[in-house]
Structures are given as structure tokens and as C-alpha cells.
Length: 403
Ligand SMILES: *[C@@H]1O[C@H](CO)[C@@H](O)[C@H](O)[C@H]1NC(C)=O
Ligand SMILES: *[C@@H]1O[C@H](CO)[C@@H](O)[C@H](O)[C@H]1NC(C)=O
Ligand SMILES: *[C@@H]1O[C@H](CO)[C@@H](O)[C@H](O)[C@H]1NC(C)=O
Image (tube, rainbow, N blue to C red):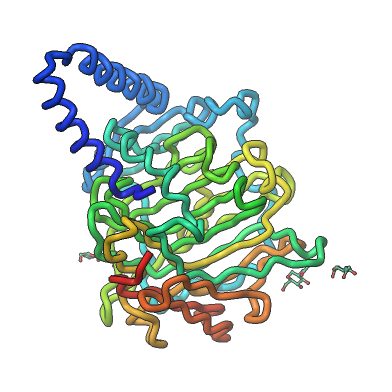
């Protein structure tokens, strides 16, 4: 399950096969297979990339297509054939406080040009390499404790025994944005998880920032989302690489690169991510940046357990890579030492409770999970009673911390 080896190993294998075949003069049948793979990828790309009404080239080398909102990939999902688009949330959540001023600069990810025209949504165009790389999704198993090479430093709500209190409807936080250093086959993220269901069939929605050369082909810090409705077996993907997420915003496209990232002891940048369930429709919204942009939603109907609400929400960092190699940096690459200019932080940490009200997690209702304390740590300092609100610091240098 060394997901990092996927591409490299496949290429080495191909080289060896080719040599072997050349000497046996059996190239043609294998050439055909390559051709079939190629055609299959082209076929998938045709299905994924809808016809754009306008195309935007970003300074980060991404191609963003403006797609008719009613013709987006989401509606290829078998359960969304007759889906009626929800253009806005049914009503605003209770418990939002004044979060305007900040110790960090807000980074506004968003298209620099005027964005997409009304009635269309910006979708990052999927290239063949993206499809090949995205096959690693199934073997990455985000937030799976037992996968070698994957490490976590997270704060999670405790599962309630009282069933009427056990249903949560979302989580949010301001997340300090860094650009941890890592190898080509490693991934490092700071994110929120919203989950429900048995381990093997877990329903999970995730969002935050990530550095993942495997996913994006570069080392930039980028916005990401991910979901699965069956423990990563057959459903789900990163961003909009498969049908499911319904995009509403004509400003933000999933996978966009952050313009600025924080520097240890220097300028700090942050962004806001919020996942919550609509009280009326049951759909799960993704809200982004301090401007509360409703980027879109995961329809309730694509989930099983999450359709009813979440049993647990978490905040923190994850790294993954080859189990036998040293682990990647997490957060700023420094352990939490109490200084907000040193380690990466989450502030204004809130979850949406069973009465659909935003609430700060108290220390007794949460637990901290760090699987490799030699490499990473997380310090939940609770409610700071100021603009920071409920705050955690996390991260670490990685290195040799075993599997
Ligand atoms: C569960 O919590 C609800 C709401 O606080 C309360 O009314 C109910 O009595 C609790 N049930 C149990 C079994 O503790
Ligand atoms: C981001 O960095 C650039 C170049 O360093 C700077 O000009 C710009 O003002 C920064 N943006 C923000 C929002 O601080
Ligand atoms: C939800 O949070 C609000 C605000 O803290 C609180 O008043 C309410 O009792 C909470 N509901 C439950 C079921 O815990």
C-alpha cells in the first residue's frame, strides 16, 4: 500500500516489460494495451471536462473552465439525475460571532480576473496526469489510523453516548496557511473532517489546505476538499474529480493555489473553512474564506450515514508518504511551543451541535490524537476569550518516526 510508489513503480515496471518484450518481439499486444489505457483515460477526461463557455488561465498554470452550472459533472452521479440545484442555504446558522479583526492576514483565494459569468461555475480542468495521479485517492485513505505512512495530529470531538446529542452538523475554523516542505511522493494537509458511519464504510467530508505533488503536480499550498460515502472503496474523490460536489460559487474553484503562505516568525496568513449541514435540505455546504463564500455542497443523497448528520468532527494535520521513508513536515514544520508565529494554528474552532448552533468544543468533550509524538504534536489551548477563540497549535518536523 505504498501509495507514493504508484507512479514511479509503474514506470520502472513498464521499462522492464518493454525490454523484455522487445527481445521476444511481442510488442504489439502490449502496445495495444497501452493504447487501450490511453483511450480509456481520454474517454474519462471527455466525461469529466464539460464544454467550457469561457476559459481562464491562472498565473499558477491552472486552466479554469467556466461550465454551465446545470451541466456540471455532479449531475453525472446516478443519484443526482433529477437533482434540483440549491442556490443558497435555507437560513444562516446561529452562533456566528464577530470574527473580522485578526492577528493574521486573510488570504483571499479567488479568481483574479472577473471570474465566471452568471450561470456558470469555475472548474479546474482535469488533465490526463491528474487522472493518473488521482488514482492514488483510493490507497491514501485519509484519516485512516492504520495505514502505514499516514500520520495525524488532530483534535476530535468525543462520540456521545446520548443519541440525541450525538448528531453534529458541521465544523469550522480559521486555518493558518503554511507551505510545508516535502518530497514528490508525500502529502501534508491542515484540514477539517466531518464523519459518520462504521470504519469500513465511513462517510467523510474533508476540506482545508494541502501540499500534494501527487494530486496537483506542484509544491504549492492549495485549497482542497475530499469525500467518500463508503470508506474510500468505490465512492468519492478529491475536489471535483468525480461526480458528487455541486458547485455554486462563480468565484472560487476547488484546487486553487494560495497566493501567500505564512513564514515562521514572520508574516502570517490564514483562511476560513466551514462544512455544515443545511437544516432544511440536509445537503452539506462548503463555505470558504472570511467572506463566507458558499462554494457549493455535497448533496445529502450521495451519502448513507452522513445524510443523518455527523457523529464526529476533527481539526488538525495529516501527512502521508512511503512508510519506509522519513515523514513529511506538518503545519509550519515546527512543534507547537505556544507561539502563534512559530507553529501552525486553527482559531475560532467551532462545531455545529445537534440544535444546529455553532459551539466551541470544551476540553472535556474532545480528545487529541497524535500517532507519532516524536514527529508531530498538537496543543489544544481551549477558548482564549479573545479574537482567537478556541485555538489549537499543531505540527512538527516529521522525519524518522517509524511507520
Ligand atoms: C439526552 O440528552 C437530552 C438533551 O439534553 C436529554 O433531554 C435526555 O434526557 C438525555 N437522555 C439520556 C438517556 O441521558
Ligand atoms: C502576498 O505577497 C505578495 C508578494 O510577496 C505581496 O505583494 C502581497 O501584498 C501579499 N498579499 C497579501 C494579501 O498580503
Ligand atoms: C448548542 O449550542 C448552544 C450554544 O452554545 C447551546 O445553547 C445549546 O444548548 C447547544 N445544544 C445542545 C443540544 O448541546
